[in-house]
Length: 378
Image (cartoon, one colour):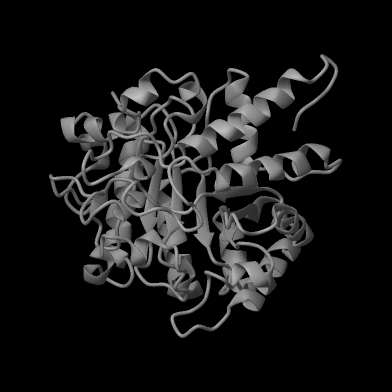
């Protein structure tokens, strides 16, 4: 199979109980969500489950299933339990299923179902309330911070917490104090964490970034690195760990770092199959295949050798001349495709975060070179 699937991200809901200001899904250039069913139907879940079982048989490499939204917990415990049962009926326990949530609707019933069907949970939270609530409020301007923290506490205190709590996901605010955020995440018991840069491109700069040459986000991450390596009891930080591993010649684990390409497909609430939906921030329809595939009609495995899918996977690798000759490419991989876009040149640009990546790579490389043979890195 020419380009195997690594991740199937399933949109259980096309609505959310938050209206995060930086959300590409609801506030990006693409507004397809308005035309999508609010929630995935049972018949589409059944078709998807059959489809995934077929893919697992026909593909030697295993894949991960990520349940996403909008906010997937809006479906409630009863519907989620039915979805988990259907998916686990088709997939053995060695195929990981995870759920990404803002945490405000977590309850014991949902946690027990996740435990029963082996569905791990990652929670999105941006730090203490003063930082989190700058961008993560409801459409009416209300805070769900206390409910999110309460949901995390329930997750952490569940008897199966060691499996269930996969970690946290935080969007970087370059004006914030990385030490305050890192201490907060450790304080709420996050077992690991990852950090994302805000969406943006050459036509629409990310929030908090002055221009292509500025390094607000890279500077923030280098400050976090300094705290991280001095911490005697750190929690893993994926973006920093992966960067260090790539510098040392190991493999990356996700799109946007390293030279490997990843087979990522999105299943929308109507069953349609799409490219990585972060591309929605580029232009209307950027995440759509020209061929309108749908799990209700088309086996996912059948599209993997299709030229359109292969072109999509290949497009993860940078094409800009500056990237082709760059010494940092094997580590940064050109960054996420969405960060390379401009109306004039499409994706044939360096990432808008190019200088940020270089700053972080130089910082971590210097730290590695300064280690004695007997030192350790996290």
